[in-house]
Image 1 (cartoon, one colour):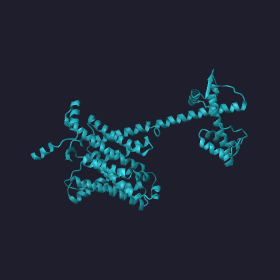
Image 2 (tube, helix red, strand yellow):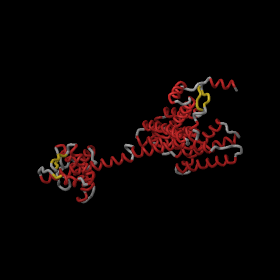
Image 3 (cartoon, helix red, strand yellow):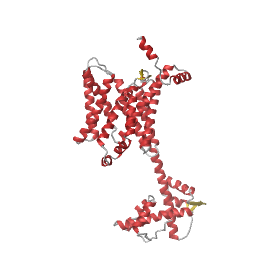
Image 4 (cartoon, one colour):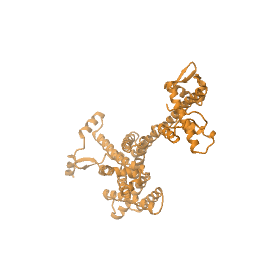
Amino acid sequence: MNICFLAVEQISVPFESVWRWVATWLDQPRLTVENAAGTLFVGAMCATSCALVGCILLLRRMSLLGDALSHSVLAGVAFVYLLTGGIEPLPMFLGALLAGVITAVATQIIHRTGSVPEDSSIGIVFTSLFAFGVVVVSQAKGVHLDLDCVLFGNLAFAGMNFVPTMGWLLPEATRTVVPALLITTIVFVLCWKELRLTSFDVTLAATLGFSVPVMHYLMTTVVALVTVSAMEVVGLLVVALLTVPACIARMLTDRMERMLLIAVLSGVSCTTFGYFLALRWNSSAAGLTAVVAGAELLTVILIAPKYGVLGRLIRSVQLKVRIAAEDVLAGLFRRRERTGTVVPESISDCRTLAGNGFAAHIAIRWLGHRGLLVTAGGTAQLSEKGQLYAQSLVRAHRLWESWLDQNFDLPSDHLHDPAETMEHFIGPEILRQLEDDLDQPSADPHGREIPEAP
């Protein structure tokens, strides 16, 4: 025993001098700092692998598969116990991995052969396997199942059990999470093109000759490996790491490369802050990791520039202001067109053209700030720049009326309202197409002159 102890003592911890310096700086025991660093490392590796495969599951609309795999693990563990009568770590891990692969394969078989929706087939398989595992474990004698470990993992203690690994003292959990991350990275690098294509357009992938079933089973095998390795750290709450960081990344970007990077950063931040909060409140690290993930998702839902609540609200207000401002320009242009004179209009009349309300006040200020409207003494008139802008709006309006009149059998009094809506959304390409289709008309269906293109 003394010889084994001396052999372990001769093996050093990675970056031992760094942890000694950090321990001195924080005035903490070196062992405490090393344990914390080991825990953060294990959590980061686990979160990274989960975030990568989680993005693929999200894009394929298969996020429920992670939940299924996390529950079917118990069936694999129970099956190994029936065969061996023991609870050795390696056979248990292989049994759990086999159960995950069987879950993925059985789900597809039921989905394809039984015409069962994919989400229903996932629910059928994982509940059946989970029930099998519960029955076996409940009947097994002399075996104690730590429900807290199954549900919440051992993230808080992942950095405390150091074992000799490849000449270093590393946390025991790295023997599973690091190989899982390496395999995941290799699959992503070697099959990047195939993964992208099969995730976005399965039909096109099959047409181009890619084997869609092979990619599906390869990816589900990797998901099973990642899920089983991560369950040792965060338990059944691995579902949070598989789904939430991917959702956060999807709301922040439309590019797959950026999505993977953002998901990884989000997952790592969840495990890091979850661990420190667990130390602060003496609570479950895995549980607080899921709480942090939920908080991050809620924040992104609120502030995401494109898909967030505030982003959509801001764009909605901007659109209302732009439409109100363009209504003012078009209204002033039509008044000048009818009278044939340049007469300043009162600000109150301009606000009426904009529909009054809060958007109208902002629209008038916006027009003045952009130099489209000249205001003085409570009156306003179009500037030269505003005249050109208004001319393009009225031209788009009357071209659209002409196109509706030519292609649809509508009464003439039914043409104005849809054209008034569309004039705000007709871009240069659509405008050129209208001009070509209508062969450059000079008047609209009401006999009003169509302004020339400014």
